[in-house]
Each structure stands twice: as structure tokens, then as C-alpha cells.
Length: 600
Image (cartoon, rainbow, N blue to C red; front, side):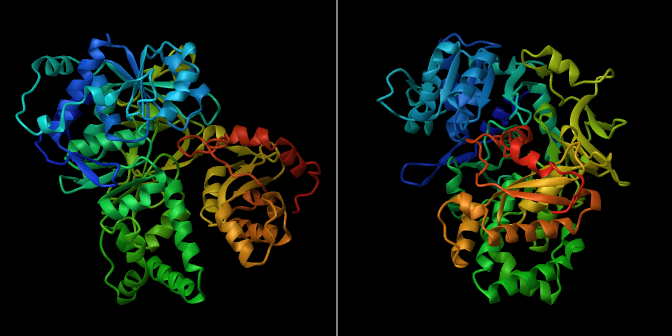
């Protein structure tokens, strides 16, 4: 189903005009899922828009959102855009200093925060911003300098009674034009600098019109919203689901996702590669609990591997051996997602052929897509048919793509952003002389027009021998192993490639305990001979699939867990390569003190 959306306000009116009794769901304090109807959504957005207008918020003004995924996030988003104002979503995992910098850069006048913890981030450095009011979603009477979101919400009983549209509100929302700025979304900054991406209503609406047309979602579908709405992928998916009439169930804490999947039993699952990698690691970890279970898993995956073509064609294999494997293993893996998912989508970062193949062998076809915040976001997407594993699908019909002389993917079309907020030079550098947007990604097309992203242009390593190495595919293979939390391939301008590995410490510590290795501290653990031998085996398996110039000659297992808080990972789970290179500069230098030899 394609749409004819002009602005994101059309998404809102489409969602709340259908008369559905369950547009959204949220978990209350008693852990029960409560519905929000289309009528209630309209009334809540209308009420909060009136409050914002009363505070002087008008067209072009910026309102920031610092919150986890919850129904109040969506209400704030729609209320801001209905006024023609601009929302500025911020990752709730950001530090107070990062939040203050983005609030100051955007010039936001109001910020809506989820909790007392998020309030403190703003309050601590409020004098560095232009914030006039802080609105708090949680009811926390002890926070006296914030306005409670609930004060503006209509009574639930009134919301279920008679219903009249607010003509003034509707007219103001319909007056918003496609060329009007809708949002400023700050990129996660893998290179160290966060930039505010300016997206218009028309940018995102034009993408929504065609991006999910092939999936045929409808009112029978439900999806858990858990990926941060401050990321364009999650936000785009929620808009698309509302357009299709599907239900969104909000899951704020990531650690409750497993429980939410068993309770909500979604029919659509959207994940970033790291989520799929963790599921795979958990399945393997459990299987290794006994020799028999491990043997059954491996036998089943081999049976699945013989039926890849059938699964990619959208059919269910009919061989008896596959049906047995499905009954013994595959159904249990699917039950981990709730047991009803018909569409699995991966975006936000490269999935990796190894991970995609493993899930396909387990009977789960993951549709991988590709896009950037600057492209609103979808450029290409694998749909139910056709689907080609390893690719990110074919470009959308309203997007133009081509490859530059150096292999960089260039994009042009209505979904390409206006520019970077307050950064005219960075904006100019992002486009070539003909107006093509430089994605920064190296890509290729196959003979059927499927797009393959091979690496980030800035991430490519060039050895002293002139060979180019794409580190991301190698890192993805390493991360597929249950003992690897993260990995960073290094070796630019050096004779050979090496790798730093941050372990999956729960898996490693459990393994070490079984082996009788004393767990004094993590530094001693990662330097233990048996642990080093374990990771050498992991690297050897990956090296076996690489060209000789790509093979990893030296390894460092670090005692640190790379996280968002420690700075090596972005909020969207991407590796900050420059941060890793700087933090471990001395260790990396030791890899290459004697480049006359490339032995381990």
C-alpha cells in the first residue's frame, strides 16, 4: 500500500481518524498493557498543542524531547508538528553536557523530559541553553521546577465520551506545508561531531509514501517500539505502522523487551544488527549447555542451510528433515520473538552476511534495508519478494542512486535532507556539484539492481602495500561469535591488519568458571593463556574466509566493555573508530613496532 502523504500531520490525522480502539499500547505501573484509541490520541495531542501554543510556541520554534519510548513521546511529537514548530529528539542515554550542547545549538525553548533523572541533566546546565520551560512526563512532585505533562491531558473518562474535532487545531495543522522544517535530528557522531540534520515534512512524508508499501501491514499487525525514537529508523517505522493502521506497543527499558515480546507477541519486529547478534549468541550459549542440545542445533542449522533458496523465495520448506528441525529448534527461536512475527527487518547498521545466513538457516528471513538520517531514512530495502541475502535490497522508486568514481554511493530525491543546522560548510561538503548527496558509504550494485554496502568510505583501511580493507564485514563476522562483544579492526597505512576485541564478558566469565580459571579481575582474565587461545580460535575461523591481505595478524583482547557510557559506541550501537584508536593508541602501536614481520 502506497500513501499520498504531504506532511507528517497527515500521518497523525490518518492514525486518529480511523476510529480504532487500539492505536497504541503502553505498560502501566501494574505491568498491564493499556490501550490508547485513535480518539484519545487526537484529544491528547490537541490538548498538549494548546499548552505549547499558550507558552508562545509557534511555527519554526524548537521543542526538544529527552525521553525513552512511551506514548507521551508520540503525543509531544505530533503536538509540536501540528503547530508548525520543530521538534529536536535527543537520546536519553546522552550525558548532561551532550544534552546541553544540543539544546544550545538548536535554540530549543522548551524541553519535554521523561523522568527526574532526565530533568537533572537539563537542570544542571540549563544556564547554557535557551530553555524556558521543562515539562516532565513522570509524576514527580519533588521536582518543583518542572511542569507535569499530565496536567494537560484530558480525563480518560471524558476521552471515551462524546468527541468533537477542534477546527482551529485542525486548520493550523493543515496549514503546515511539505517544505516546512519538521525536525532536527542529531547524528550519533561516529566521527566525533554530532550534526543536526534538518528534515522537512516533505522529506519524511515522501519516504513514508513508498518505503513499506510491499509489506501489506494492516490493523491485525502490532510492533514493539523499543529502538530509540531519537533515531530516524525507529521514528520512521512508527509513522509507517500508524499509516498502515497497525498498533504500536511502547517498551521503554530495553531489559523488558524479552518480557514484552512474550506478552505482546508482535507480528512485526524491527531490530538493529546488535539485537539480532545478541539473540544468536543467547541461542548458542543455551545450546552449549549439553552436548546433545548442541548437536541438535548444529544438525538443524545444516538442514536449514539446504533450504535457503526456498525461504528467500518466501515459501516454507516441505522437506521432512526441515520440518523436524523446525519442530526441534526453529520454533523455539521464533518463540523468543513472541511466536507470531511475520516480518523481520534490520536497519541502522550492516547486518553482516554471517548473521543473516545463520537466521535464514534457522527459518527466519531478515529483510535488511539501508538509509541515513539525511535521507529520511530509507534508500533501499529488501521486501518479501524479491529478497536477496547480503544486499540491502533495491532502491526505492522515488530515489535516484549512482556510484561515484571511487565507489561512494550518491543519492538524490525528495527524501534527501535540507542541510545541517547551523553548519553551512558541512552542508556544502555533503553534496557534489550536481546536487547528489554524498552518503560516505562505499557500495556496489549487482546485475539485478540489488544494492550492497561494503563499508564506510572513511572507515576503509589502506595497508602500506596499497591494499584496501573494509573493516565492518570482518568485525561483523567476529561479533557473531558469542564470546565477542565488539571488535575494531586496525591497520591503516600499516603492513597488515590487526584487531582489538572487547569480550562479551558474561559469556566469557561463565566459560572461564567452567574451565576452572580464577576470576580475580578482568585484566587477569583477558591475559590468561586459555582465554587468549580461545580468541585466537575465533579469529582463525574468521581469517579462514578472508583474503590473505585482509587476515588479522595480531590480536588484543581488552579488559574493557565498550559501551555508550564509556564512549566507544554511539547511541545507535555503531563503533566510534577514532575513539577506540585514540584510547588504545599505545597498544596499537605495539602491534607495529616491528613491521619487518607479520607473524603473530
